[in-house]
Image (cartoon, rainbow, N blue to C red):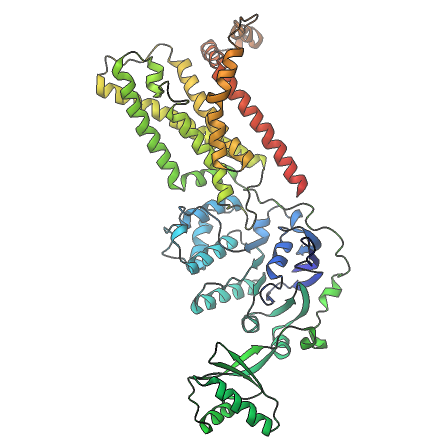
Amino acid sequence: MLQAIGLTSTPRRDRPPAVDDLTFEAPAGAVTALVGPPGSGKTTALRLLLELDPGRGLTYFRGRPLRRIAQPAREVGVVLGDVPGHPSRTVRGQLRMLAAGAGVPVARADEVIRAVGLGGLEGRRLGTLPRGADRRLALAAALLGEPHTLILDDPGAGLSPAERIRLHELLRAHARAGGTVLYTTRDPKDAARNADHVVTVDAGRLVAAQDAGDFARTRLRPRVAVRSPQAARLAAAVTQEARSARRPVEVVTEDGNLLLVYGGDCAQVGDIAFRHGVPVHKLADETGDAGPGPAAAGPEGVHEAGRAVGAGAPGRASAARRPVRSPLRPLRYELRRILGVPPTGLVVAGVLAVSAVLAVLLGRGGGTPLPAVLAAWPDLLPLPPAALGAGLLGALSFGEEYRYPALAAGRGAVPRRLALLLAKLAVAALGALLLGALVAAADLAALRLCYGADLISVPDNWAPMAASWLGLTVGCAWAGVLGAGVFRAAAAGVAAVLFVPVALVPLLGQVMSGPAVRSVTGLPGRLAEFAGPRWAPSLDHWIAGALEVVGQPAGVALALTLTVLLCAYVLTGLRSQARW
């Protein structure tokens, strides 16, 4: 059961709140429709239920507020607007990534694809889906965690009549299994036809909360829809004959040639048209809205549950702390995220191609040192292509999630959780290591192919060179991740990567150019004495190489940049949580 008590949105300036003291229930095992005209506050009410908008009131999902539910995706499935996600990601890839986020088996993605009728569209890109398929994908994402409660904002928008029938059959099956379904609609006939309970709102306030039968009897009334090219003449004839017979009839004109006749039937209206020689193109019985207003509901339309659950408790804040939907399996989520979009492969392929060409050109003259040739790092570039590519991939890992949010509907931002950050840093480091190794191998192969294996040999100090090379690529990848996470844009992540060689390295080079009073020479030996017999002699070589790398201005600059970005990320994350 879903219980909403005293929901009130925060007003803007001098305008009244969009939702004002709204209290209702959505029982388990039933489909509840939230009905109201455009601008009545339906969507705002859903966002208050989910604690996405600031306001007052309480909402309980089976007796618990959302912020106290450890796994919200297992309790509540949400459809708000379009499905968020990268337009180049496939339907199956999107759902498998979200399955990792919800902590459910990957096979669940194929199950919901079949359940919502997306079979055959698994390989389609999100950006190429038609409107109806896009809505079905949003419903599939909501069903991934097998939630007890479904909350949907106008789920039938953009669907064909057949797709709407399938949608409501799916919602009905979820309710029959004991779940709770709450959806919004502006069409009262849709609510009367497909819902078990109907909650009517207008101007943000509760008008009535009734069973569907009571709603149809008290809020709807029969009418005759007539379409004629002489609608004005027919309207005058119907009104005149009803007045003569002293019958209460109301005639409403819509769209120029459509008449809605309240208080008559098809036989009466057809006979009048025949007697006056008026051609009729449509004549049908319909059920129409009686219009908003508490009087139309009658005394039996007042919802008793609002008083039962304590409607007098709206004074407590419901948005003091917004629930955060962080991936339950962050490492698996991040791997599916980075491997599911074309930009990852395009960046890697571009880096390999550019590096190979630059390595061949640099090796042609014979005067460039071998490390710079293997790294494809000419003096005119601030960073080698591999480091720039690793930084770009790191920046996209956070920047694209702010641009195409996927973790939670309607939030538009990635939650700043430690597990997610560690997963992104781990995947970025792994990608940077692979990219650095691939570039070095590709450049070495290109040099040997062009100039012969005898001229290009592996140097003896390859270990510190490799440590320096891989450390640079990993550091740039982490700078991209943290920069994009702090400033919420991929461009900011790339700017953080370029800041190191362009601005910080020259400054530190001047600072470190003075005479050194002390040094860390002999540190490996002192560490060996401290560790005792457990110390492996081969570690001396690696530690000396690492110290040589870190002691360079570029290493110091990269370490400082990463430290500052990490502190900024933590501080902004704590400030955001306090503001929520």
